[in-house]
Image (cartoon, rainbow, N blue to C red):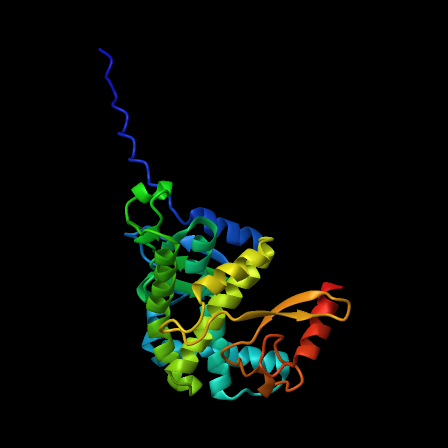
Length: 287
């Protein structure tokens, strides 16, 4: 008599990630930054070049090792030793610019705002990778993802913008506290830096997506002015070129201190860069 072999029961389908499309799009336009989602019950990567954001927020030896990378990079690329506060500023910028996109890009592309507490992210900057374990996310009532586990439905665009600000502040707050003493900056200056990372990250990726003007408009609505804890708004403005060209710009709320390495080489959005120099540099870039 033939034996009957039972087939294994099929695994329950995994619910689609509400963030995957946004992170995949980011990898397409900015291959140097890739985001991997970790299942809610999974572990964030550890070892190799990975550092967990919660460990950065604790300061100490992990933060020392993290900033040693920036210190070595400055000495290698510029042939001089940067001040410790400048090194710390570089390290925070490189982390925060990328981390903010975990929240702002899904919002910009799909109106979905993930909560990413500091214990839900790991970063490997040498390879340009972020790992995130996102659970709860905010969305609008008409979003098909509203039926997914973890969805938090909010009513209206302003409520969703508030969720973006809250999610970024929740993630960056502990990190800023750890970096602050090393950067010799108080809370207002640190949150000013966060304002810049939110705005300029979204602006840059919006440009890569072919939606620069919409990214600027969305950033202005997100940060219309001082909205706690962010002390300033996105604050875009336009400059006129010699032939009537229009160039978008803004004045950063914080300074990256790069001028301490090369006084003549400031960022185009640095308050130290006059409008005439900005127009000249933007005209050259467009040409």
